[in-house]
Length: 111
Image 1: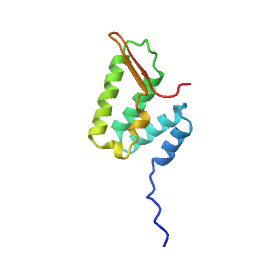
Image 2: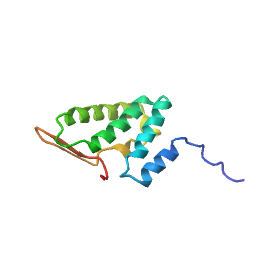
Image 3: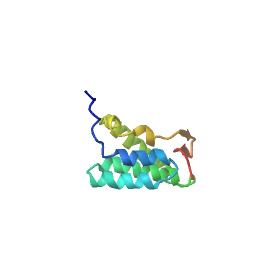
């Protein structure tokens, strides 16, 4: 008897597209739109903020607040157990450097 195939995950095509081209933000933004359309507003906000942080000028005076919001959303999603179905690690900073006046973070491949 053949094993049953895994259940279909409607998010798989979006995540596959993100993994296939990690530099392109379009798949992430499309995924965020789909998440919002499917009632996952907090995860959609998280993905969109990730894209904004990755593309934001490191001299932007609001980067500290954006990063704090990102961190709060990360903690909220992890507290809710979202990492069991949402690849939070895919959207985590690769490197964070904090000084007294700036926060610098590397959010994966850049264009």
